[in-house]
Image (cartoon, rainbow over all chains, first blue to last red; front, top):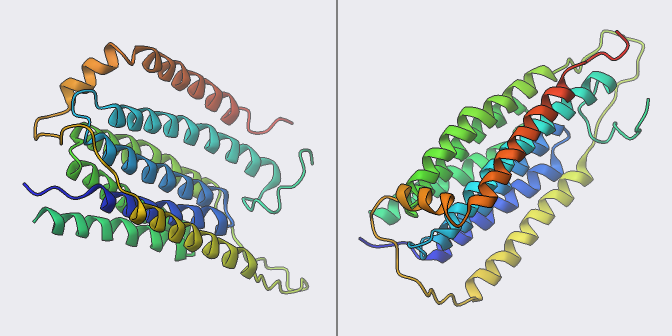
Length: 103
Length: 173
């Protein structure tokens, strides 16, 4: 069984991270930014799993990736609740238009 | 054979990411994110992380993506207005796009340069083909017990906080 070198995973993860970064910068929508953040978290997880492949006894990388997934789930729920509140108050989802704490 | 599958799923993931970047409609973006998550799960399998791949599909596709699509649908609104006396707004968000693409491409160039110039010497053994579920379970219950409990508390706090924030949508009523 031929195994893929770890650099290939790292390059793919770097590309995915940069795409996620560009998404969260360019999108003019709160949820678009969240999509970019999710892609960035996935890219980091690919790195962790690729390095954790060389640690079959303790699997530290995979455990760390598991905790990253848990934190990502918690983050998305709270972020969506906040976005819904902001939308209910300001009637907009453009981050540039939400520039006041109180309206 | 394995390399070909790796290339196919990498291309699928990156193409889905680029589609999200260039698509105007966020719903299409969310469905492309579905493809990206599946591609990442396939990469996990190729790296020998079977449990993590199944968790990825269940949590991301089954939970997070559904939540995101709910959020997109709840915050959609009509951009057009019937008021004919208003001036037409022409949005030119060009600087944000240019800076976003420049940041992404620049960081990618930097990261690839670092990765290709580095020389990793792996200390441990390469993973064999056995399943990782037993090891993950034992590690979670022995040496990673405290982070496990903290993750449980974090999820509970996030649940209560999200429910409290999403309740009471109209404070004047």
